[in-house]
Amino acid sequence: MSFKWRDYRDNNKEKVMTIAAEEFIRRFLMHILPSKFIKIRHYGILSNRSRRTKLKKCRIILKVSIGKSESKTKVTASEFLLKVTGVDINKCPCCSGKMITKMKIEPKISGPPDKNTKTA
Ligand SMILES: [Zn+2]
Image (cartoon, rainbow, N blue to C red; front, side, top):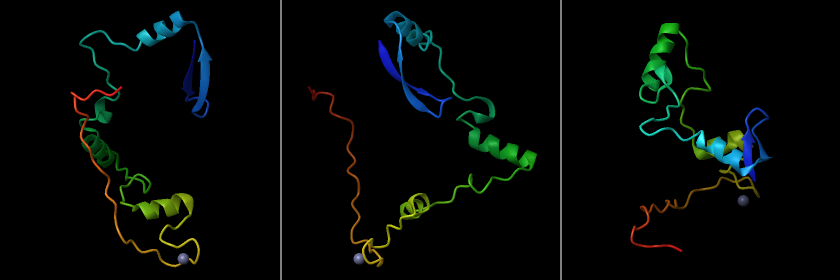
């Protein structure tokens, strides 16, 4: 059998691996934890529960300031697009005139699908 996978060591390239079905199942089962075990991605100062406060304390103790790239400065979508793509969406592509927001379209937020409604 063949499956796609990402090689993080090779610039995150998507690759196709072909192995025997039994070997795939063996590898897949290695990811399943015994019952009552939980996966922990980060622990210590990087645990989700206290990462922000503990990292802040570490920075104070080590007298390290947050770099400008790390600091949280709010950037608007148009500022972000200008920085990333070099395209100013506030300028008309034809005459370079200033674009004016006439109306904002809010996203439609819908709840989870009804349990009783079955989809094919
Ligand atoms: Zn124009």
